[in-house]
Image (cartoon, rainbow, N blue to C red; front, side, top):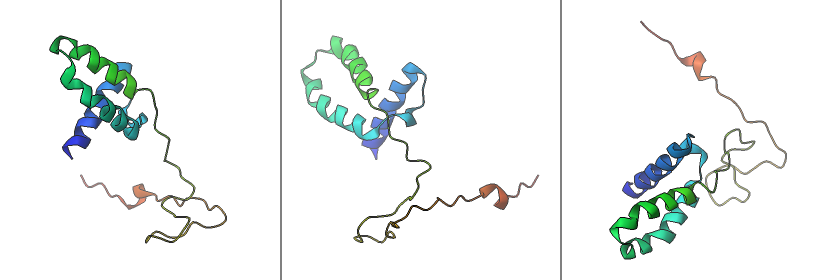
Length: 107
């Protein structure tokens, strides 16, 4: 959980530099960037760490995340190997739930 928090923190820092949301950037890409760059950090003199950090943040911003919202068939599988339902042969529209109808505000 700490590693996830640290990676999300770097993604947030990178996104703040360009004024966008950190949700727009690929977490998997950020993990790969950090895994590739982490072994080099021990060989870098302390005066060059800022340059290394800035370059890492720029590299994280190279790949946006694909949008998973508004999926046609969320959480369906092609082959039955899990407890999720099988994907239908024809596409069906995603059922939207109106949560506002079930919320009552009491003052």
